Amino acid sequence: MRSAAAFLALLLCLYWTRAQGESGGVTENDITQTEVQSEILDVKATSDQTNITPDIWAELEELRDMVIQHSVELRKMEKLEQENTAIQARLTASEIKNAVLEARLNTAENVVEELKRENTVLEARMSSNELQVEELKRENAEQPKVAFSVGLTDAGYVGPFNTEITLKFSKIFTNIGQAYSPTTGVFTAPVRGTYYFRFTGFETRSSNWMGIYLYHNDKRITISDDINDSHGYVSVSNGFVLQLEKGDVIYLVLPSGYLVYDSANNRTTFSGFLLFAM
Image 1 (cartoon, rainbow, N blue to C red):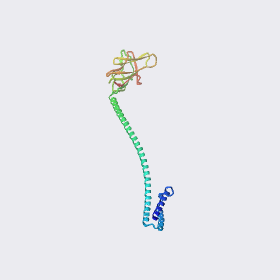
Image 2 (spheres, one colour):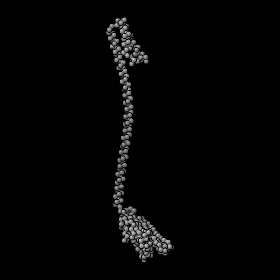
Image 3 (tube, rainbow, N blue to C red):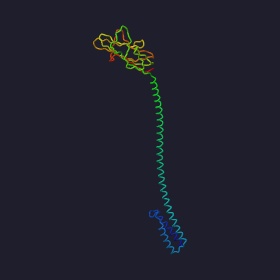
Image 4 (spheres, rainbow, N blue to C red):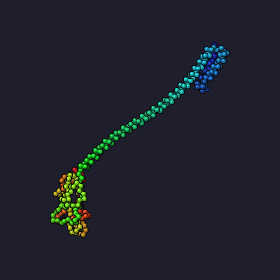
């Protein structure tokens, strides 16, 4: 009975100690080997008085060791739970970062794909433009270069004559393509196309008619004339855009009884060039 009473008293003390820890007085972490040993010494003193058997003492020591071990394991478990909570928080943060990175990566990939598509379109346009440039180069290379600009003479007066004459402009400033002949005074179209022609005439003597006819093949296109009825100078000029077939001719004619004047100042001139082939 006494042994049972002592053991019951020890259990009540341990229960009271744990209750104090749960209520804030003493925690499980405060249970130390010294406190347990103190309680056992008290029980041992009681056992000396009540003749507790050695088996009960051994059981108390074993119980002490179990309590100490339980406390240590409990602290380890709490530490592991804290570490696990921290790891879970880190994992959650990492998952969020990974989700953000994946979203950014997907966006970047979409941008790259869009840039690739745009680059493909630009390359196609560039190739098309290069082909067009090459085509224009070929057309430009194939298109004949035709342009001339000539002056009549440095000798002064030409005319008047009893019949019409073709004016032969002997001073060559430009004759690209050699389509104008200074020997005949005739321009011959080397290709079918649209051409521009311009001419000027000048005269200095009074009471004289000055004039020039422009001919396309046998057809007279225009008459440009004036009379010098004073002591001043007179001049005429005109220009036309004409569509010519290959081999068509253009030339200027001095009418019968008319005259023109030219000198080193190049007052009477004839010019033309190909606008575009057709």
